[in-house]
Image (spheres, rainbow, N blue to C red):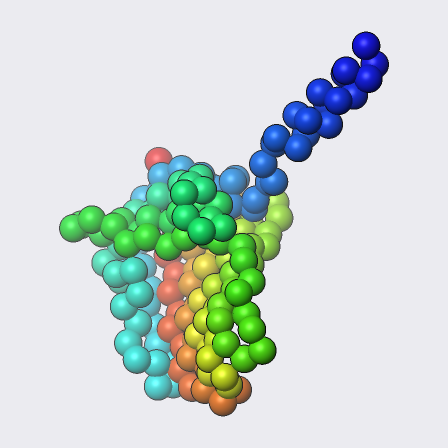
Length: 161
């Protein structure tokens, strides 16, 4: 009997999916105030996900995509733009891409970077709980030959619906 219980315990533990720091933020959010979209250097324009026109955010537990754990829906008046939260490493010696999720209590961050030789385009997306509000931040950089030539900074304050 003990062997059967031990087997079932190990089996059930293996069946439970690995916790992800974005799990704590699953839900629907409304924007408080106006979202910020700002550029520095020679960034090519800071229009990612229609962030400056965002009216809400949905964090969805969704494993449909390639090595995906969640999907962020940046809601705008005409629909939404999606960004997958992923963990993978498809880098070769000097090209490819990778994504990595980190976080802890009241904080989650996902980095998604494409690399081509000495050039890369990292995108960081984070959510942090701050009292009754949540702070959504994104930073998108353009790295050429190891130098940051421009970045876009995005920030919005959210409340959970």
